[in-house]
Length: 276
Image: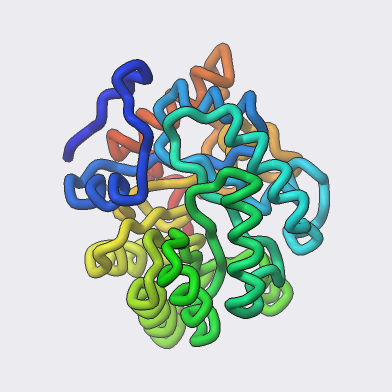
């Protein structure tokens, strides 16, 4: 496995084609959520590859019960803050709830997130036919897209809570089909959240696009965590698939660097961070 040297001074900006090259070279992709300029600078200093402005900010920053109340204006605001603190990491941002309900709304929202916010890629949840149509509409207009399958926080009420997805033969086959569908529609990256590690490994092997896992085992092409989870400062119980990297370390910078190193070495996630 190729492990990238963590040297900020020698680093070039991460691009969409670069992520695909990393997959080919079996170079693990390091991603973390980020919501402001100070954390953005810390991610860059640790050579994190992808900074994700997640609508998780609704829960970890705003203190809401879910991601659903987060607005497009709020996502634009936080994306612009993160953009000001980044030099090299690829800036990916969530399209908030109902902002991509059809191609026209998705294009309008993406124009704001990329034009006003400075994002390089937008992320959306789901793999249904209509979602694939939205992905295709964005892709044909050169808007890079990250798809998201498995546990989809914007569908929490439909799913019945924050629980593992893709368990059982039928559910696994459905998720597998949707993974191929979003890739065919033009997605550049796929995030798999809270799915069985065997299924995530199969999808990662089969797809040409990078697959980034969160609670999906170590065989994915990269890993992402909510930054507050990996620092152990999220209120309530930390997800099993996460780890407190700040424990035993003196600074947030050291914790982020340790996370990046463990992902690149393949030591995170470990067995105790695997669901199921």
